[in-house]
Amino acid sequence: MTNSLEKEMYDIKAEDLKKSYGNFDALRGVDLHVKRGEFFTLFGPNGAGKTTLIKLLATLTDPTSGDLSVFGFDAKKEVNNIRSAIGVISHDPYLYETLTAFENIKFFGELYGLTDVDNRARFVIKQVGLESRTHDLVRTFSRGMKQRLTVARAIVHEPKILLLDEPYTGLDQHGAQIFGEMLSELKNQNRTILMTTHNIDEGLDLSDTVGILAKGEIIFDSPTSQIDPANFKNLYISKVEES
Image (cartoon, rainbow, N blue to C red):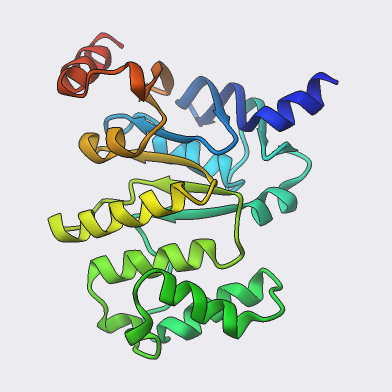
């Protein structure tokens, strides 16, 4: 009964999650609970373990120890089910530069076994505002356009959960604004979103809950409604320095 309730409440649940590379402990016991439909932003300095955590959640690497479930599936035993339920967006778009936007999204749709893949690819390309560039080679796209196409890649199979690893990296102010607007729209589609970022202003604006990861541990988390945005940067610095 408890397991059924937890599956209903949490789309991401990590308990004492650890990841070591040789003698280096990238994660030292992360406890993380992200509710269904929640937008959770995790802040942290370089080397804090943010990318390692995203890789664990995306089943791209295995934890050294601890328990992890994503969308109710055990990360050790139900990897394929998790991969079908998630979409991943990072600072690396993972697109093929010599293919068109349409060819890229169609390719990823086919990987997920979509049936009406052509129409789905056209739909998500239009959804991210790139309809006029559908048949242009990705190598001709700006950084901001590639990031928008990355969103199309990540949502083509209609995932329940989005994992965003430093998605604002390399975007100029205009590109960051457009990308933030897209994330706001995705949030309104009742998806569960976990984002890691250095971008405090955007992170606070979008999130339901925020946390701070430092030296492989989550040292702070709070509903955004209980945080004073004007003082959060100072809070963040003090928490990281104390860790």
